[in-house]
Length: 183
Image 1 (tube, rainbow, N blue to C red):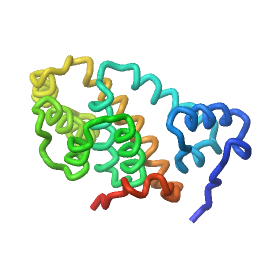
Image 2: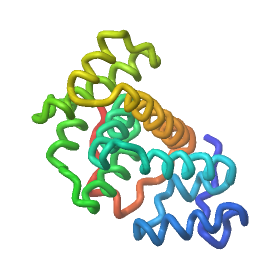
Image 3: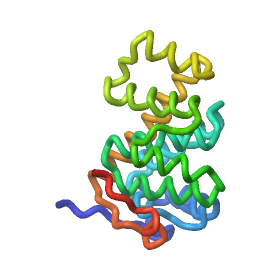
Image 4: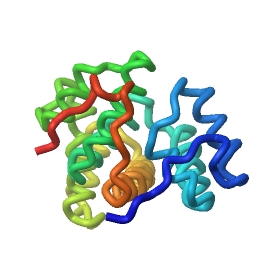
């Protein structure tokens, strides 16, 4: 296994340092995956830029986490599930709903279940959702254009999932309460 460097703000390439400081200030910790991404400033910038744009979209924070955790689950990325669960929990999001996403159980709110299902369809079909898949998403109360936000959020998580699976970041101590078996 090739070892990847677990950077700190001080050891990271100059172009990554401000991003690391900003993340740590915002979330109170610096996840090991972000510390490892810092070794490639262009990758870190791409991930953080996509994250910033998605956060400004029309999906609520809970809806964004449903898409992200669904993607994490389908890709078998327990590190990313733990990270997003911690952030969601500390943000006051509905953890019962997110635990249902992790367990792949039906969500109690029909609109959120439609989002969860649509996300799974997009991932398992490689983006090839049928007209009826999109219509069901829209019928549940989403705008057709929000389907593209789901795709962008999936792309963001595919980036971090694949990196986590490649670099195998050690699980941060603060994430331990959120680690789950991904089956």
